[in-house]
Image (cartoon, rainbow, N blue to C red; front, side, top):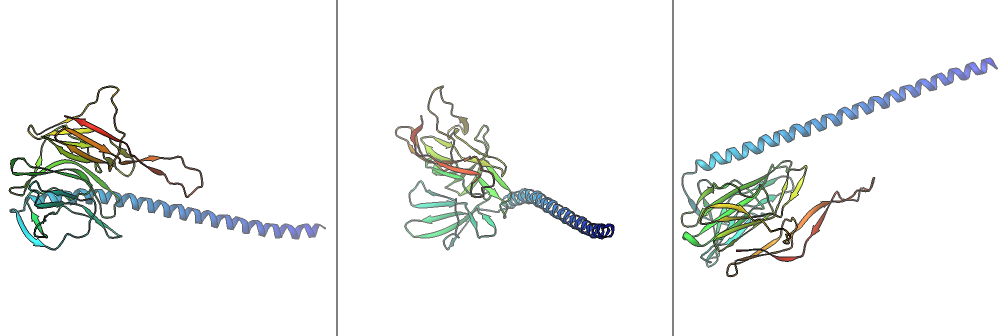
Length: 303
């Protein structure tokens, strides 16, 4: 029987060696997988840093290019290329439409525009306007036309991203286009709204009103319910402050604003915001965020 046990012992020893070798193999595979994941994460971090640098570089190069633009130019062109989230504004004269900015995703990369087009309602034709000091490319901004002083188009905020959409930039700048000369000028006024897109802006009497919107840095998303007024006679911003107990709209983006200049009132309807929802473990069908659509109507402010 000793020989039998001895023989079995040898077989157990071989099996143990095989198991140890198998464990070593699995351990080496796990190490390789961890190393590969680490390398992938590092590549993504490097790519994000590169995108940051590229984003800043693109905007700086664009600003330099616009500064070198010699003069205002205009040419007849076919209809603009496909795009979303641009602004289409009726000229104060009522005879034409002004299309500015927007973006287009072709399935691989996102392209942003800062082109300004004039569409003649009577002639049914498009003209592309090039101008010195034009705003940088953007989408989801807001534009409002003002008839006084020969007419002006004001543009506020919006967003820009790297081509692969791994990095986003939100604007907080205000621009004015002189509709008599078609020259852009960036308005230098302090205490304006924070950087955002998806907000709304309307012209009411001698003021512009900006409300809501959101800011997204790919880590956190913040929705706003603040209202800011830009005085067109003083070229000054101030934030609207409500009295304690007064109703205040919920934070939102994509709402609708309508101005009633005769009453000096601005009306608000709808919009949406995203909120975090509880996740059930191992449930891959649960979304990390839910969209809440809003349907209440109200008067945002009265002058």
